[in-house]
Amino acid sequence: MPHSSQSRPQVQDGDALAAIDLGSNSFHMVLARYSLGELRVIDRLRETVRMADGLDADGGLAPQSRARALDCLARFGQRLRGVERLHVRALATNTVRRLRDPQPFLAEAEATLGFPVEVVSGREEARLIYLGVAHAQPPKPGQQRLVIDIGGGSTEFIIGRGFEPIERESRQAGCIASTRRFFPGGKLSKKRWKEALAVITGEFRQFASLYRARGWDEVLGSSGTHKSISEICVAMGLTKGAITAQALPQVRERLLQARSIDEIDLPGLSSERRPIIAGGILVLEAAFQSLGLEKLLVSKAAMREGILYDMLGRGGENDPRDISVQALIHRYGIDQEQAGRVRDTALQLFGLVAEAWALDEDDARMLGWAASVHELGMAIAHTQYHLHGAYVLEHSDISGFSRQEQQVLAALVRTHRRGVPKSAFDALPDRLLLSARRKAALLRLAVLLHRSHESDELPPLQLEAGPASLRLVLPQAWVEDRALLRADLADEKKGMAGLGIEFEHALA
View (cartoon, rainbow, N blue to C red):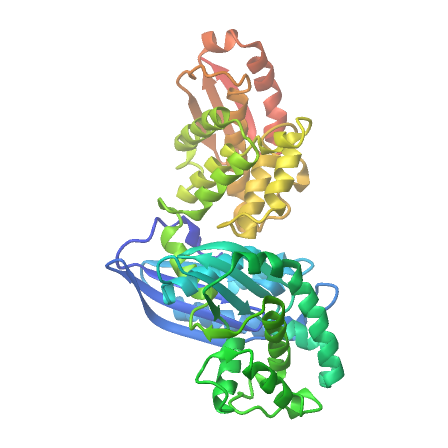
């Protein structure tokens, strides 16, 4: 069973942090120590895995790619053993996002690594990339930047100011994916290149006008692809490290002297990068053309550094998820008074059973967020609003949340009223199922107790929890005046049964 890194308290001085990036081309791990307000890198590990090479059109993953990925995670896990006061966050990106059924791979990955593995959306990946670059190379006051990251399966484009992203885009055009898509069999030609460039440039132009209108003062590239192209530019005597609009076509012409990928002979290019460099150069040329770029500088940082800095804020006053939940409340016009009443009661109930049910601080945060947005679906329709809200929460890009966190949030909102279908928690990994069902039970009770939407204070509550049971005790005089509450309490036994919990209530 993987360690639950999410259950650790906020980072303290002397703690160790590990960020793991399960990329489509390479897996990276950065291990750092938090000391005196700063992160000091202890170790870095990188392995070329090429997971995207094993992804088929139906969303399956080839056994060889799966084996390479798990072997790498086993080595990462071994490095983390024995590290004291450790926080770990492992995030999977494009290739795992595109798997038809990611759960079997994620279960194997977690068991092998020894820690939870989460999946992030392309836009969340973009946010973390920008965060890593901004901390590694702090911007000047007021400076606006464009950051581009060409991964194995996708490319992210972020405009930001300071440490905050303003615009985020993620497109299915990475170095491995584009090499496979446009140069099948490894064959190269100017005709194929021209056709491929037109396709990708067209895809990038869908957001290019907005980006150009935003503008930027500096362009940074964060990935192994940019580093490799920069080294080629230097080796060819074209630049001193930057990638420019004048140098890039010369690199492309030199590459296309080869008739196949195996014959590519570019100065400064490593043999490891050769099989996928064509797709990388193609994507970068499309970015230069669609966005009108003149010069790009290479950053040493990427998503893995962003994960580290994001971990410092998670669970604290600057948790990006708190900001996102507040944005949802305002965007969907949620009744904040009712949401606040339900949240406060849900957390009160949480405090009564947290120890018996082995729920932690992260569970409390998730329960609070779910209570805050449980009526989100009313902005769409009052009928079956819990279904509408759950759909929005599961399928939206919500900054700071991993895909699994959004799925938990959606499941809690889906099950806070009416019957609980057997499929309500199907999307969750096994390690999250029990705690999710228990949080759902607490949210159901909080909503039930505030069904009237009135601001009357609740009486003292008693709640007792067994491994699969809940017993709520309420003052008889208070319940007798509330006919709707009495009916709801009588019906709740059936609702709780759908969560695998035996519910009873008593009057005192």
